[in-house]
Length: 385
Figure 1 (tube, rainbow, N blue to C red):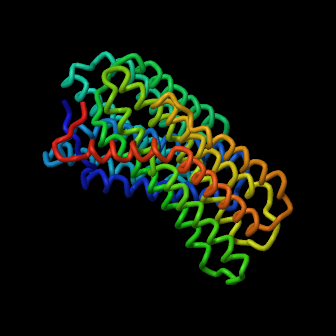
Figure 2: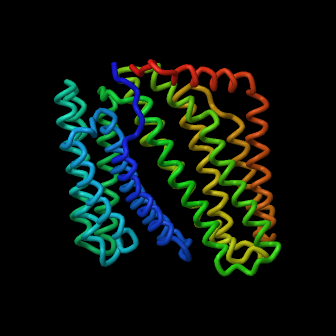
């Protein structure tokens, strides 16, 4: 029996480095919305995401009032800071720093994972996972010493080997703190939604103050608020309750699929949306270019469909409203290709709010029951198994 607890202050401090890392990824894409930049950014984001997720799996068991775990997290924070400052140059002059920092911090996570597994009697899963994830980290470290195709292939191989490690660990148990695990992922979603808000806010600096700008900016803000609602209104609650109901291998597999794997495209979608909105707000009265339009549409679609996948994986029920919503976003990109940024942003904001409203009305009673059940689970004295 693991007692529920919230994220510690040292974990929140750890997250600040990832705030900076996400900002660096957005900056590296800004002005370069092309496929080479996007896939490279996707690889860097995957490495950052995987590193963060390792400590999220582990920190639910740590007592950060104890000096040892606290020092470990602070050292990991310092190492990740080196990783974050090298994000923009990861495919250039800073590739070596990025690769070595990633290997060093992932090595700390691997050691942390192993000692936790030994303590809990869950070494079979650790043996299946840790050697593979460290091999993947070693490939990233080696790739940092190269440039061009050699670096690309080594880093892609590192990601593939890491994912194979996650697959190999799927038949084993790694007990998590359910409430802490769900909360930590919710906090990361807030981090990336904050990046979208920053992108909109930064666009106000030097804007012409035109009506088109204010219409597009308001639409962007509405979409970010709606994205928060679409995750935290009920999918977040579904995740926490599903993890509490599960145990053993089932719990570990659900956590891996719905969170560690399922939340990556969600996070990528928000980043893509943030970049697209920043570009759109630079020229809101003009027709939106194809890369900008598809960045916004792709980002929103990734976000809502990733949530639908996670809910399906956790509950066995698909959030059907999210699918036609994603299709509608694509239709906007096709049908209104020659319309202004303000028009496109406003149309997508209306669609997103309308879709979420339909969902809330259609499942009003079920959602009310879910909210009440979640509130009951969080009463003092409740615990996660």
